[in-house]
Image 1 (tube, rainbow, N blue to C red):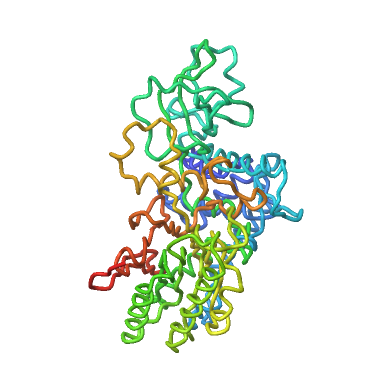
Image 2: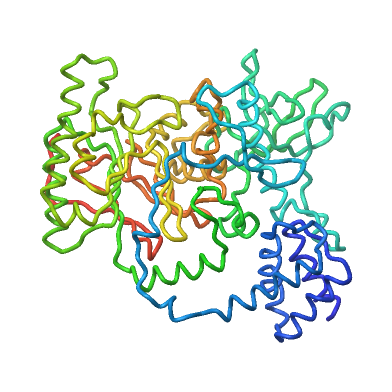
Length: 541
């Protein structure tokens, strides 16, 4: 029994890439005995201890006894510090942040340290050749460390029957001279100069042969996606694919347990224990609080203002004021980037009319935060992701008439207590379908909405393409990253509306506000769930 307990303790720390010496193992056993932890609860208890240990600045791969003892004492103290102050009514205003992409601190993966490092050099919109390479390499390294931590890939130091079922990840440089052997590779799908599909990793590339592939894994595969590929290396120097799939997605709780001490958003890091307490307070005290999300709010279409007025009337008449209303572009039904002066003036006038409409509802104006996210057709300083906010000259009256207005980048993030909400306005479905590589011959027969969500979250990136398909500002590529996994991702798209929860992340598309009969989506933070709301009656556009 003692040996089984030892193995369980060692296994729990190995999940976080830690090793235990005899002294550290003895200390953990003492802690478990002191609290009379049952055998079935040992693993979860030790994982909590290991997660908190790895948040310490002086944590080492081989567990230091003094640091571990300090972590245990801190956990003991935190359990005993429940005060009456915590029972005060919480103020959502002090826990609500709208974070623009250009405000987020940059963190890059360090292969030497095996963790994230803060970028201290100034970031520029022009970028550099080095930053373009680092952006892609960061994506690969972040996905790779998640794969290697996955239970199907992580080797154990303990004798086990499961050891023979583990899959070993190889590099392209290990293929040379080993024709006839089978390999599993992780790399980026791309095209060679000759037009062939190849797989690139940090060490090189290899051409792929899909002729013997029966059924690819779920998800959508585009040029620029990272994929796990299994196949046989041939004499011709190609890899005959027998299986291909998306890399496994890592749950938010797992990533936060390892990197919870890193402030990815620039608004202060919180521990998992703090997140749990905040979640409980939101469920208890803010059970009826809602966020509204609208997309394709075409202000050049008069029917849009009819729909918005109905929405505001309904909120006022039922005393149901949302905390946040996110309005995603396009704010025009047709592009005016090359329009004349009249088009520009009309664009400005439409925002002025919206300012007058909102300000005519005092309760909403006083209590609701309005977030404006530009779409592909809207006028912004740049057209490359991440996109700058709407130009201030177009929205000056909104700034003056609406006190809680935020003109956000695309994408942007909303931090609300322990939750992170990513808002992205892009016609992502059509772009992915246009650029899929030939590994899914019957793509239309699948669940495209599920495939899209799975692809974006498994890739841990909002823009899983090569730069010639969808360019990004390389110095700010981290703002498109979905790692650690957010609580919610809003993929505002002209495609059909939907909602999918995948690996604990809630994803939804509110669809077009006008085309879908004034349809919008209401998100409830207390439940981490959303639902479609729609006004009755037909709408003619």
